Structure formats: structure tokens, C-alpha cells
Image (cartoon, rainbow, N blue to C red; front, side, top):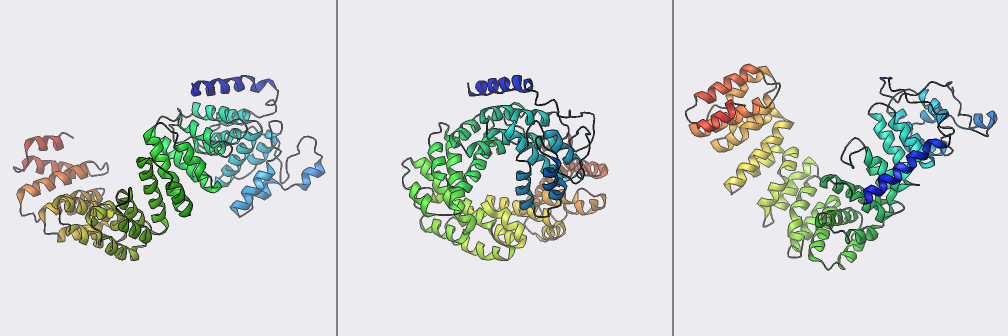
Length: 481
């Protein structure tokens, strides 16, 4: 029903938009122009002068700063603030004058930014006109202009603006058309409406990311309690838990007393658990050691045990390479250290692959050890294939070498000169069956790389076909790829 109302509202505005004569002076968007910049008509260029607005004499125009002057402003924030002031009198009567001045600027990202501010300002004064004009431009940049126009429009007509942007983005499913700015513009005046509208996004992941965007916007205004009250009324358990966790995670990065006080009032144990996980995650982002120590000390409290993996992972992403060993030594003291290390092994491997491998190869559980070694080798091969390859050849455990072969082969597969190095990955195995598994793994790795030379793939497949230690069904799955 809401979608129908939005559609009708947008259609009604669209029908009457061109009856007021406000667009007669606007240049049409030239769809034949191949330029990445928006295609505009070519009215008289205004060199180093602000446009002469209606009811303004030339002297007043000359006294104002020109857009070309603002373009040269080096400070981004100062330029952005000045542009908002510059476009404050923009409307559909004078939009073509501003467009002509923008057209005279050098093409590039700075001019694109000015265009977005132009459409945002125009959207505030005549949202549909700005939106329709941007829609008739060409190129990818126009999607940003559409989002800017819709965000400005949302400040005066939120339902119509949201309906328009949802209409061109398949209900918010498309990544190129940003609905975030529109929703955030709405949230400043009506947080409840912003949440209600975000629920219309059908894709679960996209909807969750819009919740996160709303929480980030709320963090600038501090009305976390209001957003939590709204979240608590959501019927979908996944939506509720996602939003609650986001609220407390963002809030927990900046303060602890207020969110703790609110958390103490939550009676629903499920919601309380998500609030705890979120709060601890936010704390870990600013003080990983403190959050981890607190969670270990209070792990019997609801939500703490479930938070430990997230805390460890967040902490690992917050330290330098030189601090990683100290962090690992603290994590290793926890009762569930093996499980925690599994959750953060990629982060450790990126910072110190040798340290990660030392831990992985000493993991007591055989299955966990193989997974940890494989994960470590995957990260290591991406960051330094030569060192990873050297370590691979030093490994004495056939099974662990076999699990690691895929990552090394994938890292070497793109160059024909590496053929001998790839084939050498199959040397040194004592167990022929394990070697057969490694052969399958290496063949799959190089076959999946589009740049792998064909002769190498054919050589490996011939080896697979001839290997008596590989079952026929497995051979077929590789040879028929």
C-alpha cells in the first residue's frame, strides 16, 4: 500500500510539473554527446562572472564571487560551504545560468562535485524538475546527480522523492543509484518515516546496510534512544536485531554510560543479547584490549560469550603489525583461544604470516589446524607469493602441504614462466594418495585462472588422467571442466 501511495504521489507531481512554464528556459540534455560530463546546451559562456539572476543588476552580479573562483578554493570543506551559499538562490528559472557557468569549468572530479551540489540545491527548490533533468543526462555520473537531486527534494517532499528514486533503482536494489542520501535527508526531520521507508527495500542485505547508514547519520545528532525505540517496534526479528546491534555498536564507540543505562531497561533477552554484542563491538573498535579483558571477566553474562569472536576480530583489525604478537599472546590465555584465533586468522596472517602459521600448525585439533593453515597460506600468497612458496616447500606434513597447494598455485598461475614452479608444488610428497589430492587442487587452481597458459592446463590434466591414486569420479569432475 505504501509503495502504491508513493507511486501515485510521484505521478501526480510529474503530471503537473511542466504546466508552470518553469522549464522553458532550461537547455535540453543532449543525449548524443559521448562525453563523461553531463551534456548541456551551449548558451553564452560567462567568463569569471557570477550569473546575472532575475531582478539583479550587473553591478550586484559582479560583486558576487564567481563559480570559477570557488573552483580554485583548495580546501574541500570551505569550497563545499561556499557552494551551498552560492547556490542558495538557485531555482528552475535561473538553473540554466548556473549550468552554463558549470559547463565552463574544466572537466574532472571537482566539477562533478560541484554538479552534485548544484542538483542538491536545485532539488530543494524544485525537486521534480531537478530530478527529471538529471535523469535525461547521459553517463554514469548522472546517477550521482539523480541521488543528489532526490536528497535535496526529500527535504521538502520526502514521499515523492523516495518514490522517484525507488522507481529508478528497482526498489533500492541497484548499487549505482544511491538511496542512502535520500533516506538520511528524510531522517533529519522524521526518523520514524525514514525507518518505515527503508523497510520497503526487499533485499535483506541492502536493507541492513540502509539501517547502518541511518545509524551513522543519527550518530551526528545523538538521538540513539529515539532510533532504539523505533527499532523495538519492528516486526521482523532480523530487522530488529540488525538495527539494535548497529545502534549499540556505533554508540559504544563514543560513550558507555548512556548505552549501558538504556541496555539495563531491555527486558527481552534476545534484544539484550544483540545490544550487548553491539556495545562490545563498538568498545573493541576503540579499545580492543579493554573490551576483550572485560568480556573474558564477565563471559557468564548474556551476550558476552557470543561477543568474544567479534571482539577479537575487531581488535585484530585495530592494531599495527608490530602489536599483533602481543595481542595474540593475550588472546591465547582465553579458554576458547583456538576458536577465537580461527575467527581472526586472516587478520593475523595479513600482519604477520609467519606468526599466524606458527600458531596454525600447532593447533591441537586436526581439522581446525588444516583450516587455519589453509587460511593463512591464502592470505600469505596474496601478500608475498615468493615467501609463501618458500614456506610451502619447507613443510613436512603432506596433508597440510596439500591443503596449501591451491593458494600457491593460484598465485603463480598467471605467468607462463612459472610453469616449472607450479609443477614443483607436486614434488616431495611421501603419500601418493595425498599427492593425488594436491594434483587435483593445483589443477583446479590454474584452470580457474583465465590467464593460465593452455599448455600448462593440458599438462596437469594429463597428469590427473594418468594418476592411479585418483578416483575416476574425481578425475571426471576436473577433466570435464
